[in-house]
Length: 268
Ligand SMILES: Cc1cc2nc3c(=O)[nH]c(=O)nc-3n(C[C@H](O)[C@H](O)[C@H](O)COP(=O)(O)OP(=O)(O)OC[C@H]3O[C@@H](n4cnc5c(N)ncnc54)[C@H](O)[C@@H]3O)c2cc1C
Image 1 (tube, rainbow, N blue to C red):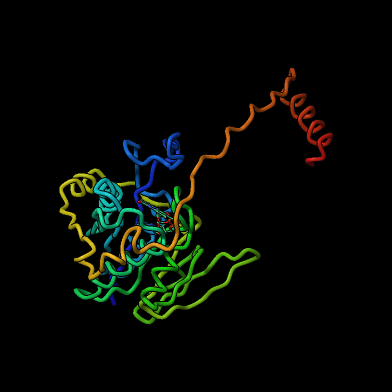
Image 2: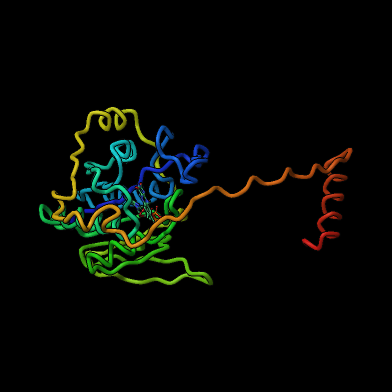
């Protein structure tokens, strides 16, 4: 049976362009180059692979973010996802993971009304907020089973999804009844590149925007009003001191000196 799959993708600053505003000590998002969160590319790829195995399966990407987050959605469309929705509006400003996951869950519920959603996929974490909890939170709001750190989808059908999870000291395999939420890790697959045809189609695709009212959320449920956390300060790690150069006439001599230094410092 074909499935309906939703993938949650976040638009995040490209890692090298993260800057902190010296005045507010908050990560600056304005004027910063953004892209699809790299970990979400694996979730998109997994949805596309399931679609290829189960013809008729539909895939939809959803993002909560400012208008620029359309870029991440179009990137997913260019790889073969059929439709996208952007959850956006000033009412979402200041959302913590609690409010963000509530908005994502409300979007999944709205999609579920037009055609039942079977599976919601997430990346491991975002490369800016890096909480790694939004997938599990969405599952909690929906009251659906959830698995995180999934490195392999063993099988999926209308009977359920069987996944292998990475644990700290091993792996385990579990079967979830559908609908379910699954957060993937980068070991799961190798994401494809977009095709030229896909890029052209993605450029033209219409992406509906849903605000809090479209999702049936009250003002108190969204943005800072609906959040439980407050950011006290944000900063980048201090710059690393310059490294050490190991001199030597040959690579073997350099390696021997390096080993001696590491032994002396009790690092090996
Ligand atoms: C008090 C407070 C105020 C904040 N205010 C803002 C703000 O004004 N604007 C702002 O942009 N951020 C804001 N943030 C950050 C925002 O809450 C997080 O970016 C968001 O909740 C996701 O958390 P994360 O990045 O840690 O995601 P993780 O939990 O690390 O992400 C896991 C996975 O969930 C999915 N996911 C995560 N976020 C989204 C999303 N937005 N859309 C779709 N899928 C997603 C992706 O699949 C991702 O791989 C604020 C945070 C706090 C604590």
